[in-house]
Image 1 (cartoon, rainbow, N blue to C red):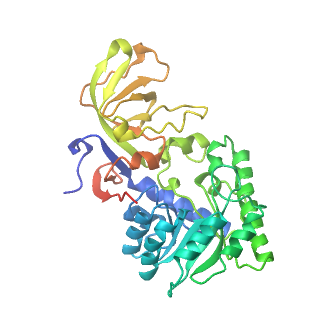
Image 2: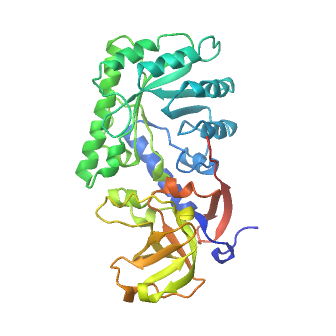
Image 3: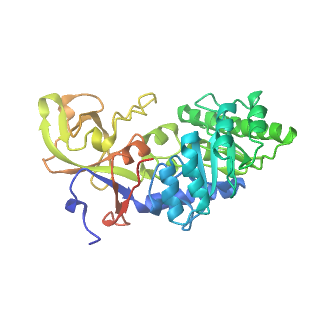
Length: 380
């Protein structure tokens, strides 16, 4: 069946450049090794076993997931050390217990006394391996978690002193790093992330609680941290594909982006400067993550079929199954004048969101030919 040419594919199709993906994965493994911490890749971007294995160096290793469905898929493939990095609720504990019964060392996340008590109650009577719990720390005001100095930190820890559960440590995610605009800001954000998590862990230990795990990470901070004293593990995910948001942050170039959507030109409106393609928001997603960056890439940056960027041509508008390609200037005279049927590729703003629109990847090898097809898993 493989290899075959891009022209053999129906469009739109999700393409994965395997050599780029493997280079990106190796870059982060090398980075973690240089910083002296373990790497726990986040598989939510790829949702794919082949990519997850590549992120871990070829064999199952510690991973981070964002859904228990991801945990199920990883567990079935031999992954045994899994962190579920979304706040846990009592209605998911039965699922967590099933994973533990399969031999998975599962860690979950919470940031309140109420959540801690709910987990303790749901784990009551559990006779097997305890459920490991990480307390989420908010080091940047971006999303959820407790501030490193929050009084409730020790109250949450105390609420977890109960049979069936084990306080494993702290976890933070510097999501605000996505809004950094230069290297100095990235380095400072990485240090803020590190210092806050380490401080929270030290407070727990001083109060008599074990906190062996200090987990930090986002792709920008992981690639920018000067040093990580006191940290035990690094988490990141989008680095394996990269995307236009990461390029806008400055941690990759467009030639590092391993994911793209193959699309066909289906028509033109020359007076308006439009070239129409068959990749709408169902193929690209509605993510406009670059809109707040200095360079807005609209719904994606357009490349030729070989993946070479066509400078300043964007998918500027989308409907469900149509994309409108225009020149960045908006000048109708500069419309993309290529024949109907021409194959193009679109680099995504957000690899996670674009990937989620598709059932699987068409995998490209060294010569840009399709050499395989890898399934994605979705759902919860």
